[in-house]
Length: 244
Image 1: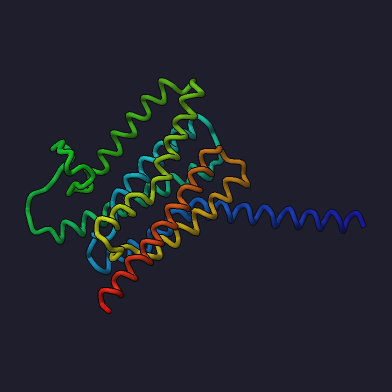
Image 2: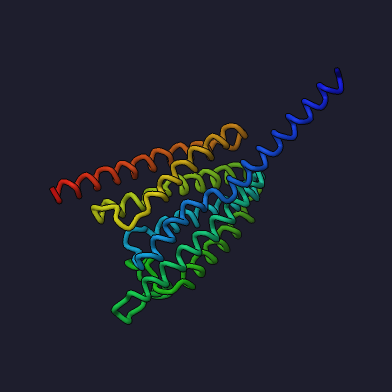
């Protein structure tokens, strides 16, 4: 009888470990999945107007800050790996956008980071400028973190700042839709996957007792995702009424 109970407990433990491992893998790579349909949409249409590259800016800053937050307060390794995967994903999106924009560009004038023209901040013509900006930002964060690593207040502020930027993820896209008065060119699949992913990861944060910054950020992101989906409904109804 004791042997049967032991086997049942062992089987349950094995199943729980497998589920935990799958959840961790989903956390690491799941955040990058929503950008696959948007990537395909840009490739298909050769047009980047519907996608805000400032989404990439927000996520790059947020995940670079999160990596330094991990150095100061070592939470789950899963979330560190998620940041690395997200940074690589954003670079892939920016590379595609630069390639498409340069192909479609009529004017030969290029806008470069070292021009120091704030009007064209994050609207540079060359992908290498985005890499240079991120490298400079990373070095700055490394120096400041090295100097203030012993301060618990600084570490918590760093985490809050990282989560605040990540919570703003959908804001650039929402503003882009307002500016265009349309959601054309934006992948609705991307936003739906954002929503599903944000619900999943917020639940994950709560269940794993992650720092409070994480689940607060996730909750804000869910609200933003819903607002963008409402934009999709609003602008699609507006289009149909104009056709009618």
